[in-house]
Amino acid sequence: MSSLTLISAALRRKKARTFLTFSSVVFAFLMFGVLSMIRSAFSMGVDLAGEDRLVVRHRVSLFQLLPQSYEADMEELPGVVDAMHMTWFGGVYQDPQNFFMQSPVVPAEYLDMYPEIRLSEEARTRWIETRNGAVVGRATAERFGWEVGDRVPIQPTIWQQEGREDEAWEFELVGIYHSDVEGFDETQMLFRYDFFDETRSFGRGQVGWYAVRVNDPERAAEVAASIDRLFQNSAAETKSEPEGAFAAGFANQMGNIGLIVTSILGAVFFTILLVSGNTMAQSVRERVGEIGLLKAIGFTAARVQRLVLFESLTLVTSAGFFGLLLAAGLAAVVQPMFAAYMPGLFLQGRDIFIGLGLAVLTGLVVGFFPARRAMKLRTAFALRRL
Image (tube, rainbow, N blue to C red; front, top):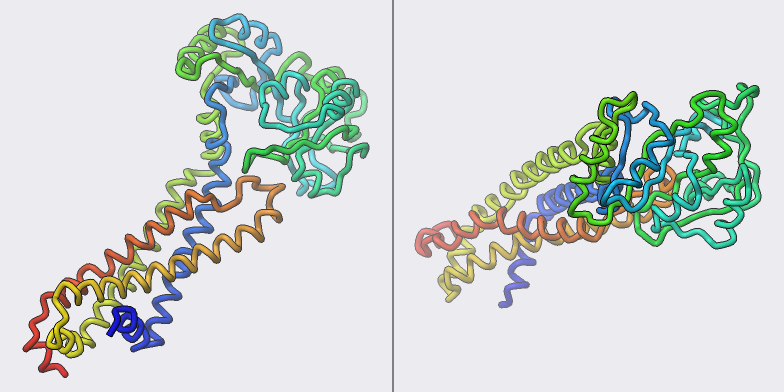
């Protein structure tokens, strides 16, 4: 009699109980997949941050402005390769719900700082030559059905035009960018800083924050400290930090997503351990006589232990695999739908492997004690239960 036959028979002994336990584990791993996607969406900026890039912002707040002249000063510092600035525009398209990131930048400097962006040479040239030209990420272009050559009106919520305070800013879409890096933000709209600075009604000569490239990532902290010392006691003191730390701080404004997800998953898996453990323990108690019979016909204690352990592994790992498969299918469906809002919303291969590892570990933990009990069961005592 093969081990697979015995395991199959044991799982089919109480079909309703096996089905309910299987479904519970499937749901737990489906939740694991969904929560992993959410965590990836919020942490993608951290994962994709350049190790050789710093973010320099106002010491008080990200929304306090810095002088544009800081760029030249920072580029004179030892260890700094390049610096470029960005500013939060905060406009909306047609409806307040149609929010996405917009920022004025110097085109050539931005593209040099972020080589992850793929933009055709024709689009680069037109962007530099067109005063009100703008480029937009593929996700946002698909979201609104924009094409190159469209005129895009953006209603301001902060930055109004001088002499035309109630009018929308109008940009000519000269290019659509994408990235080969999975999870890279393809939602931003970028337009020329010189056009923005000449047209806005206030704040000329000021910017939101800087991205700074250093020549040695190992010296990033040292360079960051040098930048902050340079502007110490000035009217606009700075806070410089690695791009990953900046992205993490920005994401954590909504709460510690990693801690929240880990806490929920911990509670879910603790519950699953109790449910699955109770199922296996009850299954072994009901089969005491049968286990005694197996030992009586020549099954060793070690083989009986392996049978119970493999039964637990089969139940939990198959349910875990199915739950992760459902999560991957769900990710394939929702990722295109939410790409314009949460570009990092996808199930990473790393999370799938972690999930499979958790399934195996859970199966081993759940089956360990029932398997030990079955191994130590005395044959004479067990046969009396037949």
